[in-house]
Length: 74
Image (tube, rainbow, N blue to C red; front, side):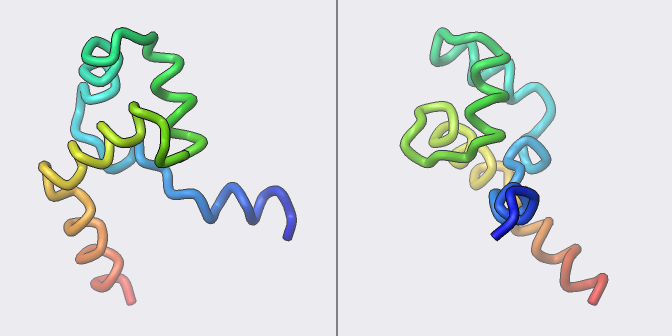
C-alpha cells in the first residue's frame, strides 16, 4: 500500500464539520486550533478532538448528507 493510498483511506473529518467547529472544539478542549486540525487530519478515534468532531458531525447530520450526495453522483 502506497502512502498516498493510506492518506485517502482516512476520511477528512474537517469537510463534514459545520462552520466554526474547529474553533469550538479547540475552546472546549482547551487546545490550539492547529492541534485540533492535526488530530482531525490523522483521524485517530482515541483523540478527544476526533471524538468531539464525530459527535458534532452526527448532530449536524453532515455524514448522511454526504452519503446522499455520493449516491446521486453514481
